[in-house]
Length: 473
Image (tube, rainbow, N blue to C red; front, side, top):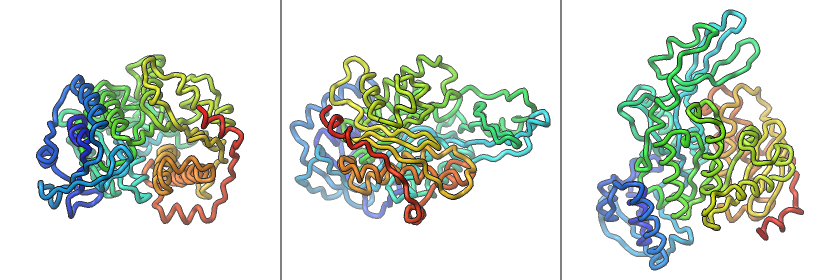
């Protein structure tokens, strides 16, 4: 599991190299091989995880310099030590730079004609799920990406696995739940007005009965799907030796098991010096078992104590009630950053501070406050018809992460011109993602993005006066 595998390796300063012959989306080292190499146990309790984290922190101070390489086919072959430091960010190549963890599902577009008793005239299922969308977007940008989550033991789950794999995403961490189905999110669209609403969830067997009248559907409860029931053990420990970024959302927090999983992965990621990026992505339909106050509290506590960078939309900002309006956030995103850090739970270590925030507001553009750089960019037009905005925010987040890694990582964002350019690329990815129905359909490849950027001039509104005040915090 994450705890034991990561801790066994990191405490000794250990990294495991990808076996010869495995690609970025390949199988990697089997758990039995990792257990042999690292002396790791792959089962543990929540209490043991906390104990192991403390032990790791102590042991890391004593020995951070040893990196062990494993050779062909995942077998324990020759090993050699290296004077590289895990603490300073040395990572071995397991083909994964970004771990995306959370939900993968189908968006079921239910086209209805409200002028004719609301009966369905067309249904189309498209692969989706915020974190899965981001994983595919990053992979298409040329970033080694792995997805961690769960699907059901059904045809829908097999299709989602195949979709991720075909996009170059490592699916070693995508587990199968034998008792719960893969989720379909029902999206009702009025054929005449174009208005959309997320009405609930269904399994594949329930789709034929949907959309027969305007009275709505009898839908499955939000917690009745495979993506609610997975644990951090789904994530191969090898990923943490190689990756530089963990990307999560907050929808998994709505459910006990998946919520515990993303919290545990985030804790392990911070321990291993990965950058934790969280996309708030508020969707009330996922939180039907919670009142808004408890949902708000859960989300704020998670992002303020676990995230390094937070991506938040204007709608997310309104829901979280941080005391910052979207207008103020766009004018000066550092106000959102300050509000998130002020909301940290009592007892949170001083080192666990949010370091950057990205604010998106559709046609009004985007703003950012990262490493002392504060600015705003105008909205981007792809020049193509806007067909579906479902995956725009996910593409923005993935584009930001991919471009950040390309220019040198988080440290490079302390340069105002670099930081602004990275946000520009993120905005371009979000714009391009809207040109086809379905969150993944129009996610750009790197060549497609580069061609678009060459013909696009985005306007920046950088608040240089804010840089010094942020650096002093």
